[in-house]
Length: 339
Image (tube, rainbow, N blue to C red; front, side, top):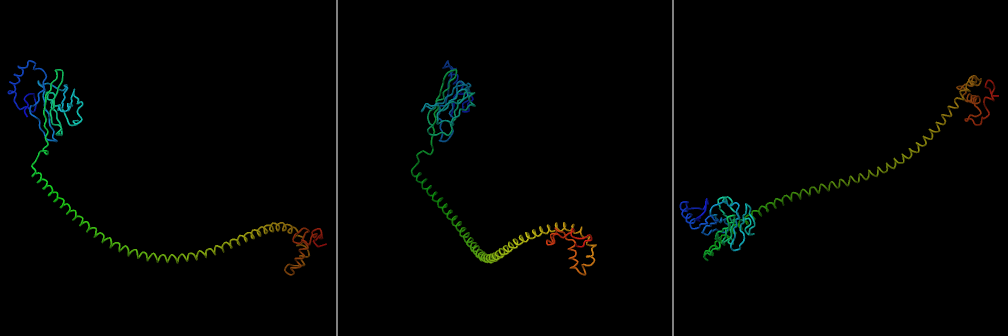
């Protein structure tokens, strides 16, 4: 691709000395040569489907295009493929969103190149590169041709050969795949069979172990039954003994009550005895000096000694001898003898 006009453009192939006469001629033929112009390559840009392409155009004379209004327009739809203004990308066609880029590195040299990524056959056609700034408006046309190498017409025998080769290769691949799959399944099945045999042997061992444990459990069950019978017998014996203990406890309670009653009576008697002993002690002095105590010794004649003692000491209110009321100190003599 040869670009005849421009400045500092990477696609230039002609030296400046060759271009100088053309530039002088253009300047002489057009007195208003300072007017803004856009120059595009005359050759059609070609690409295959899926490739990235760069549509090139150049300002003439060369000038900084950073502040220019640059528009790439598709002739077929009259829509904006890319719109640049004052350093910002503006609206564009829906099918080109995310696929176009204005190469800003060359804007300072007047290059207005546009990159389109992943082109398709629908991108084929003419594109207009339009520029507008304070000097005026200018545009140029760039043609793009996108071809699909797989859509070209081929010979029927080539197609048939390709189909046959494809079928043969596919059949071979399928055969190899099925053979490997079958071999793998066979190996896997053998492994499963061996595993099943091991499991059967293990299950047989477990069954024998379970039988032994069942016999042991039956023996334990019989032993438990015997022990349960023994426990029942012991329980009945304990019940009888508990009944006996209850009866003994009841008897003990009754005996305790009787003992408490006797203790109460004994306490009363003790208190009464202490009272009477004081009275008897007061009367013992006269008896010891009486002739009855001398005549009747408790060792030689205890009965008469006791009778003499009783008749001497008894008082009218002594409870041991209720039939002797009226007998007391008032009825005895001065020396203790009965009156």
